[in-house]
Length: 185
Image 1: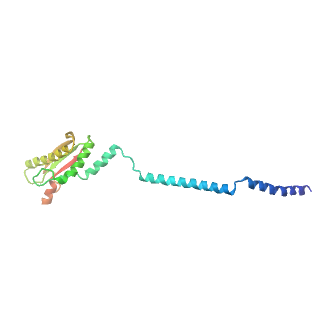
Image 2: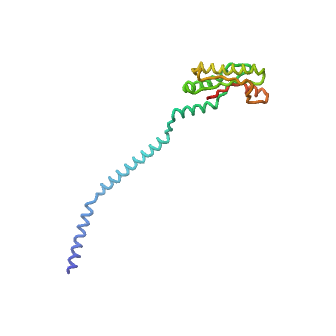
Image 3: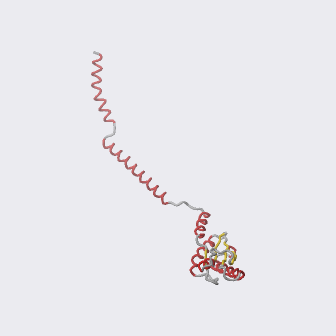
């Protein structure tokens, strides 16, 4: 009998507890609103992460002034020859832009110095070629100083015919040996 009363009590209480439990949770509208809010927050977080990736991909690392100078100097080292016509020491107009680039670098970097080497082909006496090499180097020096480079940054040396690039004795070899070389110190 006792067991019967307990069983009846449980049978009556179970539907009431179930109703109370169902009514205490969020409604379907509340669940849908919460689901939409979570989805919107996730979409915004994904968008911000993608934007940060794009910005990070477009950024270039900042270079120090020393690194910038070294980068510019290495670019200039690829083009540091000025060629001259036979028995001439005047700079041809086709080398003006090259010399302007070197001058701009030297003006921007006043602690940087340069030696201008004058070279000749093997025709002519050694004394004449030394003098011609010096005139060629001084011609380049004058152009750079007129472009604003300080005289204290420049020095001149003539090697005459002593350091040829090509020793074959052809016209092309002679033309290649008639040069001024810009050497950074």
